[in-house]
Length: 255
Image (tube, rainbow, N blue to C red; front, side):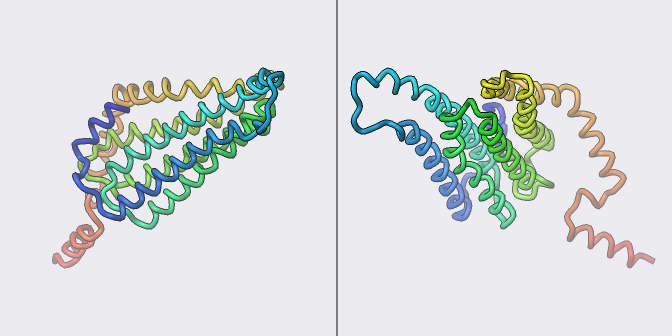
């Protein structure tokens, strides 16, 4: 992640347009509210009058909501960091990107709900499925934002290398796939402990690093060679639509 930030810092514009600043401020506000609501749910079941004899039982009941809070907080922080890196390289906005951003934020604001369900009913397999699907939806929407912004350098600088785009794409794709695949572990883990599948999510970081390393070592050159070969077969693919129309018009006018 830090290596990516250093690479992207070379192509980040010094100033953002007002529209980009407004979208970033909106996203930061949504993330901040979602994180705040997480901790408020922990103490929602604490009675106003509490006797000393019930303190031990109350503290034991707070263990599961607290763990759910910590997991969800770290996940939201991860999404915020990824979104921040994306917005640092986005140089312009359009309606499609804004719409996908709202879809992404819709999953973010839903996290306090799924976190509370997980904290209070972690032994229920249906709750685990709902929580995992929420994570998967958020990850797929983050992937959609990246693909939309970087497709043919639609919203980013042409200086952003294709290697970096492909590496980041594969890394973003790994996350929701692991979330979805972890649901298969429900057939393996004890029925009264379905939350054991959450431990498999630790693999996301390790697999992401492996994918980035494997792509740069074995796949980067073949992929770039294939793309270069396609551009040679279709010279108009690497230029803009306006330029392509101009070239075609010149070819038609030639005797």
